[in-house]
Image (tube, rainbow, N blue to C red; front, side, top):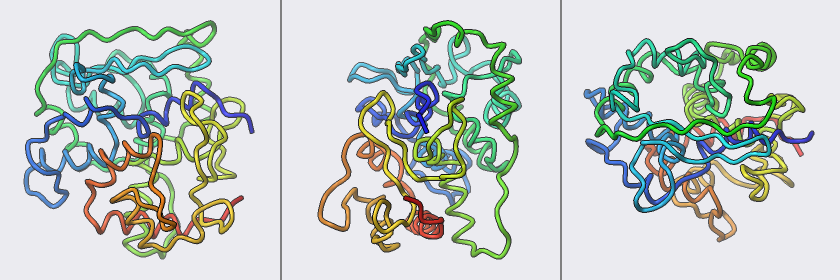
Length: 298
């Protein structure tokens, strides 16, 4: 099916990065087992791929102050400032505002967000991860940088159309999973489907921009901003990663090295550098467990 360029901006949340994004200072090394919610939140932040989208490219960019242009066939989205600046960032938000944004895709003013923000995946975030992520974002240095308005053509600039899209493509709350799976499988499913929101990029879309869950993770013929293709990550032996072992997948997520001696290229370099390499080994192994359990699709 034909990809929907506006919605492919979703993949940029995970797939794009910059040198400036790498400059985001963590208060400590991200650690999901820490007793400090800020340190745990830094881990959720890394697993969610937040830095790349909310930091503009270039050495002079201010970390997490927004301004990255997401260019699409329907206009340009500009990512917002998520530092705790009270005037231009999240400084006046409450934790409840933050919860509504991630789980419901609704702003503090009650407006529906454009799905360039992947709330469609983040809606499944756990209470603890949400609270920890909020604690971490409150700890980063505030930056005063006004948000740029989106530059969208007609009719995409009409927010009144968003409730219709939501009705067709958004289900609030945790995604349903089958019973009887291992703890590693459930952890991997959560990292892939929710925090990592991998399906937003690796799943093809229908004509309205909704994810085509008849072909989950089977790749997409158009990468964000038209830069190549998004690969198939199902265990199909010919078109996907069926020949990769669980250790191959985990090592790739850590180092970028493929089983055939090649290395990750394009946007995936930034994904590995800023996100998956920061995960603990058990979480990379859990991701491999989940991906290898998927239905092989061409």
